[in-house]
Amino acid sequence: MAEIPGAPAWARSSALLRIKDSTTLEDLSPEWAWGGSSGAGVRVAILDSGVECDHPALHGTVDHDGGVEIVVEKDGSVREIEGAHEDDFGHGTACAGIVHAIAPQATITSVKVIGQRSGTAACFLRGLAWAAQRDFDVINVSLGTSRRDWALPFYEICDAAYFRGCFVTTAANNVQRTSFPSLYASVTSVACNLSSDPFRFHFNPDPPTEFLARGIDLEVPWRDASMIRSTGNSFAAPHIAGIAALILSKHSGLRPFQLKTVLWATAANVLEAHDAPARMSRAIPLRSLSLRGSAAFNVHASSR
Image (cartoon, rainbow, N blue to C red; front, side, top):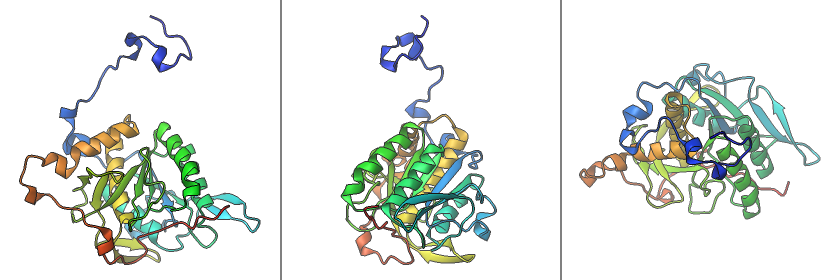
């Protein structure tokens, strides 16, 4: 049967919807998912305070000229300045360093939305839209806004990113407070577990936070070619972003929902479901942690 050009999926016959090859749940294992992968060919956007491109921990993997800085002009308008920029705080460099440590050949691009000339929710939203429109494979968002009047605009951009095939990782708030965009089903929300192994992450059976990854007492790269030790959900999210980059490097055709399924199937507590519970790390409330450094970023949500 010939396909009618422009016909929606629901109007097509079963013969036209057949898939030649498909992976079953039984196939999903860490070895299948990312064994032998380096992240090569995958583009990761870091939506943050900028990235120090020449930091020795990043080994030249940052696209120095391909990034963008979103700034607020004196008249309140938001403008994109494409090209090289600095990391004003160190937080973005830390997130980029975690992704690079896991997926060393992935290309990292900085989308600066927090800095001396930015930091509003409008900058944040524009930066996320910029990354989605350029079809980055993975977009790491270790920040958020608690203003509900920005919830719908972020929801729409996250949906758009999802349907374009962008895998968006977000950090859950470090305190028990509503934060966007980490509450949306179209993103993958991450908080800390107690693991010291970057590849040992957990599926969270109590959403909206979906995965728990390493984020406590980490040594991470910081501004001015330095290293610091810090804690926060901000650093758990890029662990999942890095693993996602490895998976996409090996299985480039996966859509975001498929990638999330692979992460579920390879989570430690799913793999060890029939083992002794003592082998499983547990999640702890972050209100009981002493958060050091700038691990919890909340964007000031102005009306602009």
